[in-house]
Image (cartoon, rainbow, N blue to C red; front, side):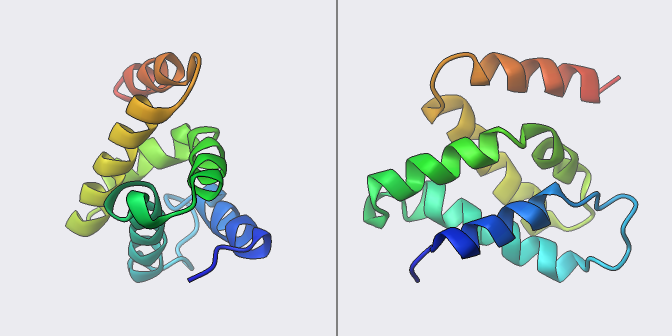
Length: 110
């Protein structure tokens, strides 16, 4: 699958959705979205162009708060994929992104 800019923008809009408030977004759509992003950034990272994976990583890392919220999903597959994504963001993101994720995770747990 080729991740065009249009596909990536669609994925990011779905990721920005508030799954707690918007009941029109099914758990299946959420699972597919998170699994797709996880496969590009984690499972199949070696077969993804570096430029593509870095751009997607930065776009997802910029949305770390909505991604963290997905850890509360009732769907085990979503939680597993989000855990892998969080690990990739902490491990591979440059600069202060890991610290921002840590701060958001600590404030999310309050």
